[in-house]
Length: 286
Figure 1 (tube, helix red, strand yellow):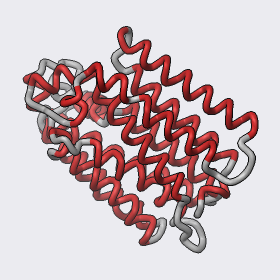
Figure 2 (figure 1 turned 135 degrees about the vertical axis):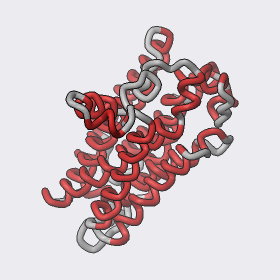
Figure 3 (figure 1 turned 90 degrees about the horizontal axis):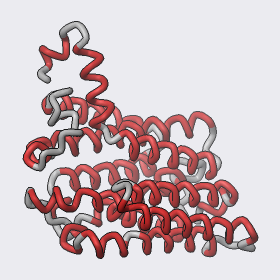
């Protein structure tokens, strides 16, 4: 769909629907919600939490739209008819423009939390754009996810009074979650990616090895979040470990029925981690 078509009666709603689908709504909503919850856990006030939510949302929108705009040709070649650009719901130029608008909004919204905090978030967003623009097809495809997720605790804590750095285990756990999310997110698309020449780390590993490897960083992240903070682990900590293990097992076993099950499990494990941090909020800072 061109800009002129979007301006026709009914075209605006069609374009809005296409943009909503092209932004990767599941991950966008999940990451925004989880990081906002992390801001609450850290002690950010209401205004600070709102700024975190707005910055993360615009950053995620920009990344999702950039991904679909860049991959439009490959998605069409792979026959991915569920993509809104491929099925003609919205044009690649519109999605590309939306990505740059969202990115432009993300910059001041991030820096509103302070120079250090904002810079940490923008480094993560930049890493995600680098992934979209080509690193996803290299053996280093995992690195932008590790940097992007690992920067989120710093964005949250550096916006607190005194600008404290996050605890090492919080950054490490977030980076591990990013690595696991990358493996789980790419897993269902490996056959399509290989068909169009995308050979990132998971594609080189192959679907079976990726399916077996993806749970490991997720479980390692949970163990860090439960056992690394000071204080007694308690029943709640062991319950978090058990629930995370069950989610990972379910995602692995259900992969044959639902290609997105491993990624849903990864988001579930991240949610468990945020709940652990909600119970341990002050420990998030170094």
